[in-house]
Amino acid sequence: MRVDVITLFPELVESVAAHGVTGRAARAGLLELVSWNPRADAGDRHGTVDDRSYGGGPGMVMKVEPLRTTIRRARQAVPVPASVVYLSPQGRRLQQNDVRDLAAQPRVILLCGRYEGIDERLLNTEVDDEISLGDFVLSGGEIPAMAVIDAVARWLPGALGHEDSAAADSFSDGLLDYPHYTRPESVDGLHVPGVLLGGDHQAIGRWRCKQALGRTWLRRPELLAGQELDADSRRLLREFIDEYRADDRDEPV
Ligand code: 4GS
Image (cartoon, rainbow, N blue to C red; front, side):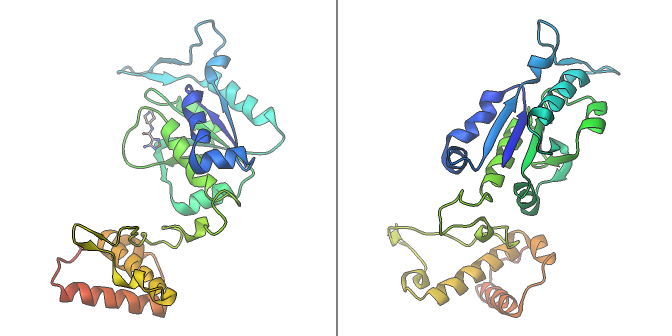
């Protein structure tokens, strides 16, 4: 998959392709990352890409023309169609199913804003989709773009180790992850749950499924509300809730 990123800070975004899973995906040719700096398309010797806001107020706004030129140059660089995705808190919240859909595309162009934002006319004419990382304000779209690239790279066939798959990740089944443990077996009197030491893989699978359901019920009940659980999952969740109540723990809100 090819990801083009339009950003005033190309080095920042390119660093995502230098480490870890994304680094390996890039070196293996599964992920091709190309960055474009709109400053190169500013058309004046100062590289002006921003200007004061009509209507007044603090902060600058990114101008239409340099970004429009850069987006069009990026689009035309290869004959592979791409949607332009703007990272902004005004977009819909990114979910794992959006990530999976993006990873199935041959190409995407990510647009990173800085300052107060981008002139609305550029967004209305050149942008296909707007996504948000969450309800908080960052100083630029670069970190969200890197997060999207990281999440997408995990779905590219071969990017994870052979026995791993993105479909097995937390959220891909709509649930939170189950707890993980590694050596030693005991730390300051805190023990690894016995079932994980016994080698009964069916029992381990059931325990993990039950924990994933139970933790989702406790911490993110709205994720369960949007799901049709099968009979096995309903039974495991019922067991979790009964044990939780038997321990007289506080109910989730
Ligand atoms: C986000 C966010 C963000 C908004 C960029 C103000 C600079 C900033 N982008 N998810 N202008 N949250 N963008 O905060 O995507």
